[in-house]
Image (cartoon, rainbow, N blue to C red; front, side):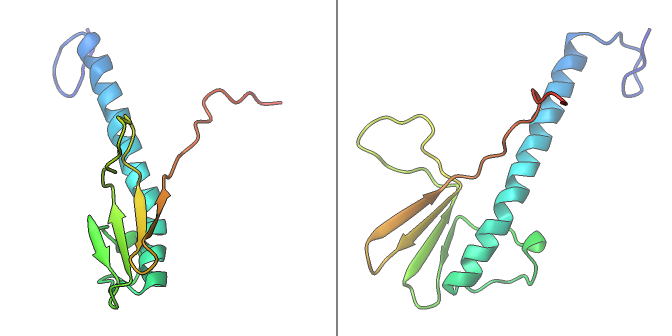
Length: 118
């Protein structure tokens, strides 16, 4: 009999599901952390008022606007398109309100699970 989190249950499907859930939570935390630094730097460069001094203390807001109103930064917002696109939620969108253009930034973490030592 195995002991899992103080219970005397035999590790089975529930233990595997729990481990899988923990992995997903850890991946989400890593992605948010990895995206917070570029978001902080973009806000700093475009003149958005920041309440924190360091990027690791920064919590991105859904919509940030520069003090002069020229740039709007969207965090984790869905993009409206004329066709159905399944993954249309980029991490950061920088909208230049003067030029009427937007830049989509999607942060990715490459997996190194299949790398073989040479």
